[in-house]
Length: 160
Image (cartoon, rainbow, N blue to C red):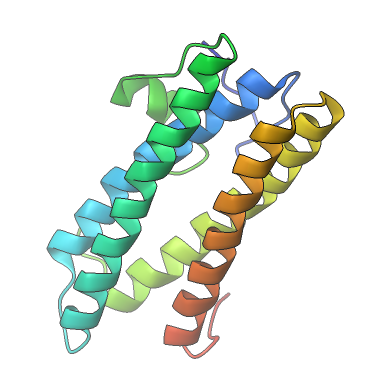
């Protein structure tokens, strides 16, 4: 399994397999966090956020499967437990008792981290002449950027 790096926002990978495995971990933790927020969101924006969080956790689930299957196809071993995922991921678990706005702000920060890492991972895959993995990273990052823009728009671009 890939080793945890010391700086959560500056993961460096020596190969494409490590980058893929790290993203499996990220999206596994994000999937759980989004469920937390989906279940515990309250307030006047409940209906819109409850629906959006469900959409996002469904997408995260698809990403986990796509990333893990790509990793297996190139001879890697994806993390497959929450313990491994929490150790490897730059995404932290969701917290209880957050306001709807705090949940959205937290997710925008996570999406910023993911986007930066996906760009680095794409470059690594390209350098390894692994266009299929690079394309996978590009596609996921395109969706992350779009959803982050939507979440920031929800906040009125009031993001720290």
